[in-house]
Structures are given as C-alpha cells and as structure tokens.
Length: 178
Image 1: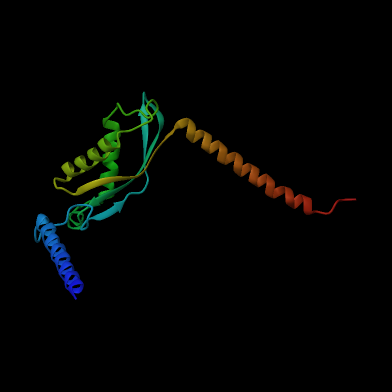
Image 2: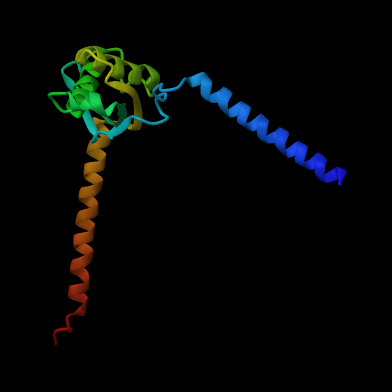
C-alpha cells in the first residue's frame, strides 16, 4: 500500500514539474508573439537555375550557376509589384558583377555566408522592407568555358556513337546478298 502511494506522489510530482516547465518555456517567447523564422509562418520559394556569365578582361571565363531558396513572409511578397524571383536574380547578377574579386577561374571557393547575406540585405534594402528573411543555397556550380566545350563535345560524340550503333544492327539483320 505504501508503494502505491509513493508511486502516486512521484507521478504527481513529475506531472507538476512537466507542466511548470512547459509554462516557463512558453513564457520566454511571450503570448501572441510571432514564431521565430525557420519555425513557421514563412514561405519557402525556390528559384530556377540562375546562370550568370562571368566576364573578365572582355572574355567569358565561365558561368556561375545557382539555385536558391529564400524565405519570405506571405503578406510581404503579395505587396510586390514585380516577381520576387526577378529581384533575386537581379541581385545575384549585381553581386557577382559588383565584386570583381570573385574570380572562379583562379579561386575554387566562395564565401557562401557573405553571398547569402549580401543577397538578402540588398533585396531588403531595394524593397525598403524586411522581405527576405533567409537565403538558402540549393545548388552552386561554376563551369569554365573549357568544361562547357568539353561537355558539348562529349555529348556530340556520344550521340554520334549512339546513331552509328543503331544503324549497325539494321545492316546485320539484312540477309547476305549472293
């Protein structure tokens, strides 16, 4: 009997502790306060692949390819008079052309934190409101002019080889001429 009473007291104490902790944790955020970004209330919008030619010394050195995801408040994005994706694409172009120190032909890395922050801050400054909360990188690539040419030649050779292979079986099936 004493064991049952001790278990009941222990269960009540654990329940009261859990309730007290939950009220304390909820009080830190405040009643009626908006949830923090990344916890809800924001829309996640993906861009198409953004392709920016990198021009150095009047020559195309390659192409910067990026696919981004940005978080926005739904009410704010509805107020825009132009598509948000056009703003993001324009800011990616502006960032890469305004920063001549970014040269992928000589440097294999990019400071992604600075890139994301610059895109977010310049879009928000341009709009005049806190539109973009976070810019996330879905994909970033750089293809040099030589890589593009090699890929094009490889695809052309593969298609020529495939065309030749499909033509050979048709000749092999034909009966021999005597």
